[in-house]
Length: 319
View 1 (cartoon, helix red, strand yellow):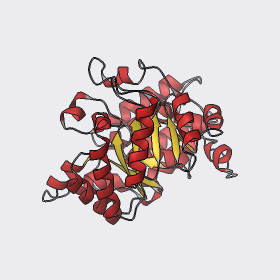
View 2 (tube, rainbow, N blue to C red):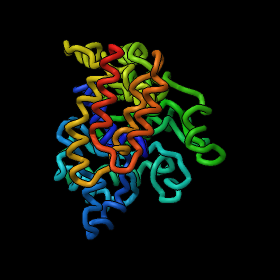
View 3 (cartoon, one colour):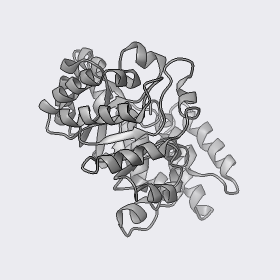
View 4 (cartoon, rainbow, N blue to C red):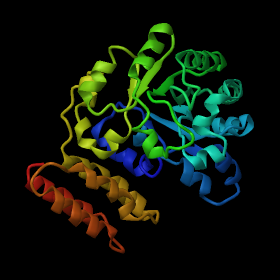
């Protein structure tokens, strides 16, 4: 998710789950190619902290040559997976001829997948919708998945809504088209040999556990970003890892070493702290804590002492 799943947020989520596969923001293959000569630009697009493993690089693009180059870079940078975004319906993405609009061109997408798979040893996966516009029959979805599987796609992360490319903005495309978990479940029944992942309005662990009785994996986006502490038992309940669930104060303490390193490189505290404000909700004093962290975190020259104080305040409240 653009402006959400950056490296700072991913480090936060690693304090909550050590097992979940994390995704980068979508990186445009064309940008990776043309920024190569610009000092530090490629690093800003691709760098991540070792604590983020396992991590997937999500790319957008429609040029097999540029996507092959992105595949080589993803492997060289140490990513664990390469994911092609075929689900974003935004006008800007569509103008660049990538994202959801490519679902209308399965043969061309297959060539892209083949190029990516040929130029790296990483699993190449795809994220897509159940359909677009009037191209939304189950038969077309099945044929699309079959074509990409033959080209080398290793997992299909299906947002269980079709996308309207005209008339709806990206936010509306997340809510207005009907949710069709049944189509994704049918896809798994019809293609049991493929890895099928369900995405779309999975709001809590119980819903994820139920979905995992019908598909191979689940992908959670905004519910994890908006309510990170709702997922503290993810490793225990979904992966069988017996670990003490993190408290909000422990999450803040956990990101401080990373924040110190980023500040030494010239980063701003607020770029990291803005994600932390979502840690506390529904308890007495939560609003005041968020407001105080926001004010102090945005101040010029703010350092990790802001996070240390925020962590201590949470500890004083037993959080």
